[in-house]
Length: 223
Figure 1: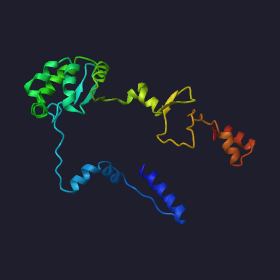
Figure 2: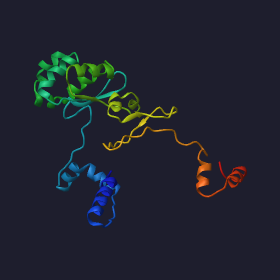
Figure 3: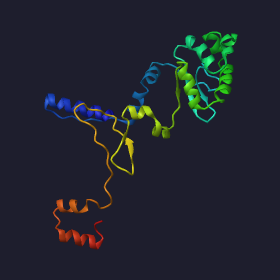
Figure 4: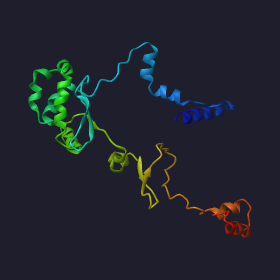
């Protein structure tokens, strides 16, 4: 993507000035740019503490939890004070909202390890799909930790045009290029050429006669 942006800027510069230019980048530079907030903080002398262990987090309601089917979800309540009572109801533990250890944000932070242990046991009782339905119904902010194989059934990936159908019966679906242009519709992907499918056409374009191509095939030099 860095190269693409650089090439487009170079082409624009050529249109404006009539002069070409070189374009370069590096994996290191891109890695640092992708972590720019933290890298800039480090350049200013900031100390960046390591992420605490999952069983003793800074916040139990911004943490990862395993479900009964071995899947994981990320709980991250966007508006903690308003969502906390709803979470307690959604997980079937309404008494937690009245527990003095978890009465407000400072208390929940101070007792994050204890709350994590409670929620660990709670989330282990149902599958990811079951928890997803409950948390959505309660209008709580969370995210499943998806696996790459989940792309095959991801409705959002299809709706966003990231997974598309093809004209290849051996590979009925594929990933679409992530760029959309209003001036051009994306082509449907077809099957790759078979071994030697275009040999005759390519050799003909290169100037070989029909007899010469036949001899090449007979000798095994051409597939």
